[in-house]
Structure formats: C-alpha cells, structure tokens
Image (cartoon, one colour):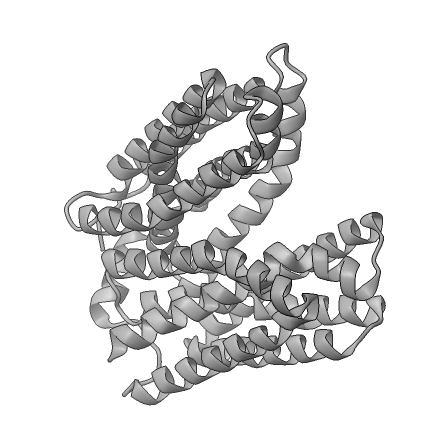
Amino acid sequence: MRRLLVGSSALFWGLQFAFLNPVLALLLVALYRATPAEVGWVLAVFNTSGFIASLVLPAYADRKREYLRPMLLCGVLTLVLAGVLAFTTALPVAVLALVVLGGPAGVGSSLLFAHLKASGARVSDVMNTRAVVSFAWVAGPPLATIIMGAFGNRSILPVLVVVAAFNIATTILMSRQRSAPDAPSAAVASADDGARVGRTVVVAVVVGFVLLQATNSAAVSIMSLFVTQRLHLPLIWSGVALGVSALLEIPALLIIGRLSLRFSSLPLIITGCLAGIAYYAGMAVAADPVTLVLLQVPNAWFFGIVAGIGLTLFQQIIPRPGLASGLFTNTRRIGAIISGPIISIGAASPTGYQGIFFVCAALTLAALLVIALAQRLSAEPTAPA
C-alpha cells in the first residue's frame, strides 16, 4: 500500500509540473495578453520564487522533521493557484499568484523525496520513484497540448485543480498510514552521520552538478535550431529526439536503481559522465536523423545518472533530507541560467551550433573531475544506501 501511495504521489506531482510549466508562457500570452518582454520577466520572477521556496520550505521541514504537512500545504497552494489563474484576466494578479502561490507549490516533489529519505527508503526506491516522475514528464506535455487544443487554453487549469486534489488526497493517505512522526530511522541516521562531509566537498559536488545540469539544459534548448539549421531536417525530428530520450530515461532509472545496490555513487557517475561526453561529441559530428536518434541512448543514461544518482548523492552528503532535495532541485535552475552563456560561447565558435556540443562535452569532463575530486576529499567514500 505504501509503495502504491508513493508511486501515485510521484505521478501527480510530476504531472503538476508537466502540465503547467511547458505551457505557462502560452497561458500568459493567451489569457492575460502578456507581451514577449513581459513573459520573460514573469518567468524570471516565477523561477526566482521557486528557487527561494526550494531552500526555505525544505529547511523548515527539516527543522520540524516533518515533510508530509508541508507537502499538503503545497497541494493546497496548487489548488488555490489554479483557481486564481482560472478566474482572473489581469496579468498583475496572475503574476502575484505565480510568485506567492506557484513558487512554494512547486516544492512538493522535493518534499516527497525528502520524506522518502527520512523514512528510510533505499537508493533503488528513490530511483524508482524518480522514474515515475520522468514518466509524468513524458506523458504530461503532449496531454496538456491535446487538452488545450480540444477545449481551449484555459481548460488546462481545471485539470490542474484535479491534479492538486489528487496530490492532497495521496498526502493525507500517507499521513494517516504513518504510525509515527516523520523522523529518520536509527539505521538511516547512522548512515547519514557516516556520510557527512565538509562544506568544501558539498560545494564541489554542487558545482559539478550545476555544470552537468547546464549542459543538458543547453542541449535541450538548442535542439530544434540544431535539427533545422545544422542537420536541415524537419522540426518534427527535434521532438522525436527529445521524446526518445525521455522515454529511454525511464528504464535507465530503473536499471540505475538496481545497480546502486551493488555499486557506490562515483562509479555510476563516471559511467553517466562518459555517456554524456559521448553524446555531446556525437552530436557535434551528427549528420543524419538515424545518428540523431541513436545518440539519445547515451543521452538517456547520462541524464538518468544526473537526475537519479545526483539526488541520492545529495541526500547522502547533506544530513538534512529537505535541504538536500531542495538544493539538488536548484542545481537544475542554476544550470538553466548558465546554459545561456554556454549557448552564446559555443555558437560564436567557427563550428556554430556544433561548437555548443563541444563546450558541453568539455564542461561534462570538468564536472566529472570536480565530483571525483570531491569524493576523494570526503572523509569516507560514499556507499550505496
């Protein structure tokens, strides 16, 4: 029963992001008549709100050693956010709702993984749960566009209300099922004590994963331009490539979860980074759609390692589960910011869009070296949970 509840919760928290985030810019223009410039700054302040909330709310949950009640709050905030966006037509009101309600509401997924860590979940359990979130991201965006195409742009907001209601329901059921307050078991606590490392090591790991997230964000951002202007293929091939990678990420996470029972984090991270370097190097010389699609195999393994092992590694080296999950979530946000200069620098090279992938390959190698050095500097080597 517990596994079913956790899986259901992961699915609906994943759908919340997968339904709203990809279409948010479209909603701002279609429903609130935002200009392109306004869309840019609205998304900026919305993401800033999410960044701050991802640190503050999990830190509060850590202090209280309670993760389900803040999750419940996130579900309620999502419900209110969808209601406000559905009934208002004023851009300032929508922006205020996104900042005050949407930023904190987006922390629910991080709190779920913090709850798993605090309740003694194994690395493989966390990985399997992350695979469910990935499935939500595969199914969510196309489903959202189908709903909006059939029933209008505003129709996605009632769907978001339903998703929020399911998030609230699953969180309440998990709270009722729990026989004792959320607190790390003795086994988990002792494991965390043994895994604690110095601040320098934590900073190095954060920097390494920010670089890895930045390369992925840059590659995804320029995929459509690379496909149409470098490979001279129809735009649909960009969607095919990204879709294949997202689909392959799910079995990759399940395999990584099993391997984590036998191997520590560093060897798995090495395989992921090598796969990432192979992917970026291959994309830099790709010239046909078959190669484009085949290269999504190492890409899926690379991002599976970053998303799965990265999360569990943060939970192992940072003793507070909420802070660990929130900090890992923010490596994605910071990486997205850094991806801009990566694209600019790479595109300015003589090879154009190919240069972006060469830069990504070099940064992936640098990230691997930083993370490996951090692991060697740690007091004890990271062991599988």
